[in-house]
Length: 393
Image (spheres, rainbow, N blue to C red):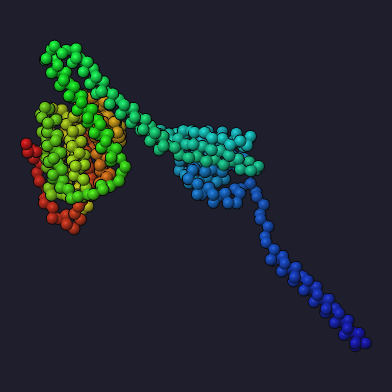
């Protein structure tokens, strides 16, 4: 009897052990089995957010109810998205059309917010699967359009500037031929031809100079340049233009300032400032050229006139090629419209900058700022400022 009980208990124990072992094996297999991917619930598909974050274009993902599920920082910065909505009607209309027929659409649109200048975008809208999601990509074309407009204006202005003196020379040559028996007329027309040839030479020379400068690279072989020499040479070259209008050219400021750079290029820059001041100043006035120590690391050359001044709306554009505040006056003075653009590029070549202060009826001050040769520690060795004085004849 005792043997039967023991056998029964042993069998039961074996059964329980087997059941426990089988259960443990199943639990272990389930733990090792990979977890199933969660079902999509209408959000952005996995990986899409990572792709959108590296795109250069403004990117927006819109769901079937026109809600924005994902938008890049650029899209929000440009004002294409506010909250969870596309706020540009043209983009919203494109997204709905793409969702309806599944066809990819491309278009260029202009986005205007309030009174600010509009921005142009190249837009591409495409469907994302069958769940109603739509991807909107918008690439900012504003700067490209601006550069293209400048290029068109540049070509048109160059053509006009070259055509005017060439046409005048052709007409004058015909006139001289007809007036061959009148020595006085021949001399008069020949003098006019000389004037037009000088104008044509100036345009071509300014174009060559600007072409050489516009790359933006620093001066290839900089040398130590005295700003005193730059100012005196520039003033000497402008004296003939100032004398007929009885405009006094004065020099002042701090002496002894030196920079690293191209002396001839800096003389050209300052000369263009002075030529501009003389051209837009009335008779019997004064143009002052000053040098100063701006801080421990920069020197400045400024040219101040008592001219007509510049309207505030034009101040941001006066350094553009061929841009003129007063085209009629520019035709009278014979300017090429490239002088201030050359100054800007010359400053860039010297790692400097240009700026202007002006008020209508109160004159203008143009300034070129350049890195100083000396350090702030040795700047104390530079002589004290000199008084403003008329440039020596």
